[in-house]
Length: 365
Ligand SMILES: Nc1ncnc2c1ncn2[C@@H]1O[C@H](COP(=O)(O)OP(=O)(O)O)[C@@H](O)[C@H]1O
Ligand SMILES: [Mg+2]
Image 1: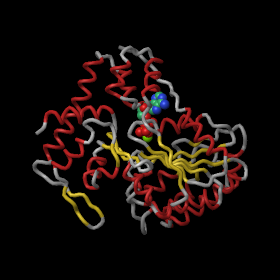
Image 2 (image 1 turned 60 degrees about the vertical axis):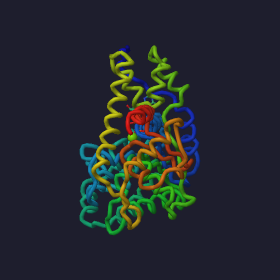
Image 3 (image 1 turned 30 degrees about the horizontal axis):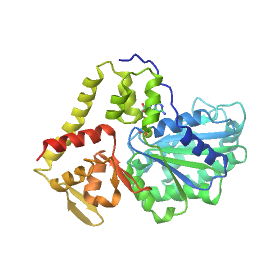
Image 4 (image 1 turned 135 degrees about the vertical axis):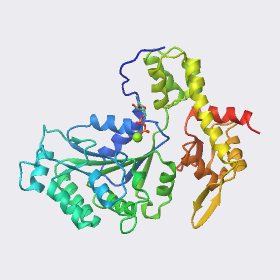
């Protein structure tokens, strides 16, 4: 049992080193940070940007915050109106904004605020309804910042606009914009984060991005790191904790925050996942959900889903090619499996899910 008030950011030295190396060289690739749910992608990038030296100007935009259905929604999350701040006082937005941003001693981190602009400019963007204008404006914006400092653009939960259509897919326009900032102009570092492994898979296969991307996996902690993390908070039963929770930071934090006996807490969490899986399989007795692949709609069969789950009976991961597409899409969409497109490996989203899978396989016929 534990009594922890505040959990500090832990480790990630390797990943931080990789990102710092990128930030210290000229921007030339779009960086995709991917990994299972609650593995610590957002925490890593947030912690990193908070500790960056003054010569970086970071714009962090999280697309999960709002539902993005229309062009206006996207503009609204991308930009932050600076009302009480520095923009209000000034007339010439462009030069003054940049002067402010690039002057030393000022706050340089625009975390979760989006890209600061003034209200009238934002209204122009709404009226124009032309995303080309917005991206052209932003290229100029970053070009000017780059004269003095190194801009870094971070878009978290990029999959949120994966299917958004605004005169064609918005994501392609965004990718073109990213390519302009990196590969072509070398003016701004771009990091895109996502837990949606099917989205990353699409990005990975995207021809327009070939040779223009870099993929950084932020996976759950390995066993040794998880052990050190728990020991830091004087957690007693590290062996059993890691056996059930693996190294997922999100789960380990829940474990540290609760006051129940560890075996009871394990059983509760595993049972919850088991119920989820059993309900899913039960539903498949009555309905055959259809998965769209190209123009086809393929029904998902219960027995095939069970066959996929059986692959994890004795091993923790399997090859991507071992699982056919409809079942893979079905299980990834339900956050049961995680696909690593770079390595071609598929594994359960968490150790708890793996345990739950193994337990229900013993129970079902
Ligand atoms: N390196 C870390 N040290 C301490 N806590 C972490 C670390 N990484 C993640 N966490 C915690 O785990 C939870 C999930 O992390 P988060 O960054 O939101 O995951 P993701 O963005 O990959 O879904 C959060 O509560 C976060 O505070
Ligand atoms: Mg996140």
